[in-house]
Length: 233
Image (cartoon, rainbow, N blue to C red):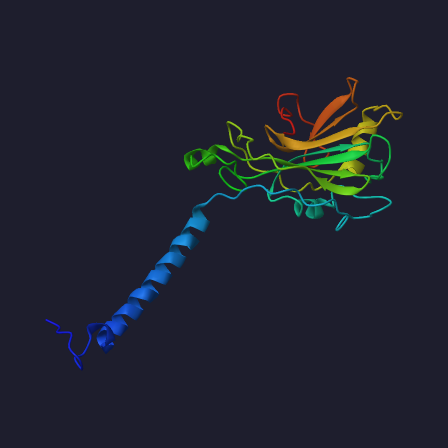
């Protein structure tokens, strides 16, 4: 029992008491920091505004851009790493894109794996986040690369498939295949890179006509209508 009289030792001034209080304070601060860090790790990532248009990394800018070799630059504009499709319009026979040319453009589609990447705000219902893959589109236009707002509410496909590898060939080789099939030379071709039932594939078509064929990702092996089934999201 401590007696509070003049000259008597007070418990809050003893070395053991001070050391114990200091240790408790350190543990409290560390626990608080760990709690905040853990909360940061478990909170889902949310979408922010898209970055401004850029021409950084575009192969051949500003005259003749290679839309396939520029995929590395396109990826830097999206926080979603998985390539899901590519659509190219009015690309020349040399495989190059002329910015500003009428009807010319490129559309790159990216997603995340299930539950990864920016997620929608669900008011605490985080159990649902695994059903979202999100989607973001980046376009190649006359002003360069333009990222559209991210779409975090995009659900994953019912049957998850592997993301697309970067193309190993492109419009230049596909133009040759199109000419062998008597493609109309006075119309612009559309090239779509997507995942078919048998793997990466290209679809070549002339919009508003019946001209269309599908080839494997090597730009040469023709696919049947069944094997070539698929589309760009």
